[in-house]
Length: 391
Picture 1 (cartoon, rainbow, N blue to C red):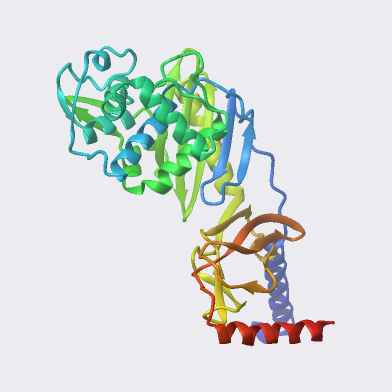
Picture 2 (picture 1 turned 60 degrees about the horizontal axis):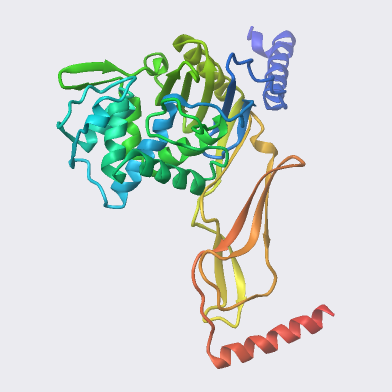
C-alpha cells in the first residue's frame, strides 16, 4: 500500500503544505525592530553608508575632542591634493624638527629624512603617527595652522557644521572639536571619493625604518567584514573608534567616542555593526544618470527629454519589508526648451507603506536647446489646443 496515497498520508501532506504556507507568511510579516543596543560611550552613531539613514544614535551632535579621529580629515585633505595633481604619492617630504618632536604616537621619522608621501600616509592611517601628520600638513600648506584652515574649509563644504579643527594630529587644543555625526560625513566622503586609498585603512600593520607597528583597530582582526577606519585616544577624548564594515553589498559606518578602553571601543562598535546588519537591509532602487522616464519638452530641438537622478537612490529598511516599498515619479508640467542637464524637473518619492522614506530630485539628463522657428510655432499651436481641450 502506498502510504502517501492513503487518507492518512493525504492528510499528512496537507498539514505539511499548510505549515509551509504559514511559515512563509510569518517570514514575510512585519517584524518589529528592537531598540538599538545600549552603548557605553559619551556619544555614538550608526549609519548606512549608501542611504545615509541613521540606524542608532545617542548624543551624536555633542562637540567632543576627537583625538586621532582628526586624521580622517587630515588624509582626506591630502588625498584631495593628490587627486587635483598638486601632490604625488612618490613625492619626497623633508621631515622638520617641528614634525619630529611632535608628542604622542609616532611613525618614528627622523629630522631631515626624505620620506615619500605614500609612506607618510600609511604612517598616519595605520600607525597613527602624529609626526607623519604634521609632516604632511607642513608639506601641503607650509605650516600646520594653514593646513588646519584647509581642513575647516573642506569640513564646511561637506556639511560638518559642528566641527572645528586646529591641528592635523588631534592632540588636545582649545577649539578643536567634532561630533560623531560629522565623523560619518567625512568618512562617507573619504570612502566614496578615494576607494583606491581607502584600502590602506584595512591594513593591519606597517613597517617603516625597520619598525613594525600594528593597526590599533582591533576589529580588523576580529571581523573580516570590517575594513577600517580609524582609532583615537587622549585623556580628554577617551578611547574612540570610527569603524566600517561591508557585508553582502551593504556598508555601515559606526562611531563611538569617549569609551574607557581599547576593548570597549571595539566591542561597542561591533555591537552597533551587528545590530545594523541583523535588522536592516539596503537596496538601490534607481541608478544615477540612467533614464527613469521620458517626458515631452515643448519648443525644443527634440520632442522628448530623458529624466533621471543625478546619483543612485538607496533606501535602508527593516528586513523583510521590501515588498512594502512603493516609488512614485512626479514630473513638472509643460516643460519648455531650453533645458540644461541637471536642472530639477520633478521628484521621485519612495514610501514604506504610508511613510515617506526618501525623496530625490528628478533632473534632466541632457541639454535640449530651443528648436527652430517652425518647431516653436507648431508647438505653440499644440499647446493652445491642449489648453482649450482642458478647459
